[in-house]
Image (cartoon, rainbow, N blue to C red; front, side, top):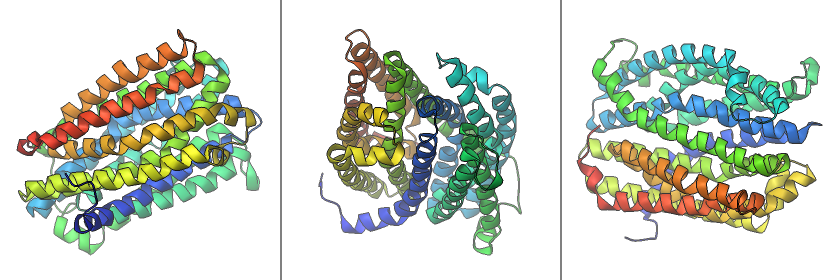
Length: 449
């Protein structure tokens, strides 16, 4: 295997990955801005701890359904690679129906039971009260979020990640603007503090969903893919979407619930340590979110080339994307190691939180260098049909490596916050090695979706 990038392959990867990275990075910016604005409230430590739990708890539930984008993406990419555009349009139709129904049902349930959900993970009633308000407003936007998930998967699958980029920029720009209005009560808006951050997110999602709807009525998409002109429920398509998506959903739930447990472990050390953990997790989005953009490129290119039976090219694109992702994480890792204060000051000005977070962001910065291989090749294997393997690998390494080590180091061995975060390198290196060996074996080339 050549460890240097191939210019010909890299250009195609970057063509698809760059808009996806731009869109995902805009989400990362919002996450940083959310945390930065909340971190400037007079109750910063309490609000940051509540936001950490509220965000992770919300996404633990949302991720159950947001992975429907993966099922839609993989199927559309494969049909597109086969040259069957109307079939790709039928995948979108069925995905939209499923996502709309699920969004309405679970958005309603999440809205009414937000406090009970967050209280499961919090040992502080004030944290639960603050976090539940944030979650309630996030669940109001769940139906629109899941509709956008279907559109996102479709445009990923046909390689038009620029549409997602524009929608994400619209959504996140509105999110930032309304954060400023609603968190602090500026320009005559009510001062809602943490709950305002949740409402701002929902406003952004609502508008971006209608942008997707607008684009699908353009002739260059509507005519060749014929989605709205021939709407038919297909049990086979719905079954395939769920067969791909369910393992991804289970994996996401275990990851996010695992991080909730991890945040809870740091809370056993102290509220300050829990707040510092939230700040470092937010900083890690700087690295992780663009990697998901590379993962999107890997899924699209592998789906296209497996669809037209070019297996060697599919594998080549997987490795090429992992190389480019690793170059990126090396650059970000150096920043985390050399100037951690600069990164942390973007998120919070609380001196106590920054001092507690500096050692652990350096640990995270070194560990995340290896995560590009894990994330990108996991996405590649999902595109090929190895969803269950990826899911089981993630669950085992997360719950049998990461969390036990974090707890043992932090609590029984009394190594505190640094001890908890020392579990991250063990988890990342183990998981990434498993993904690399599986992808290199080539057995996934015989799988079907």
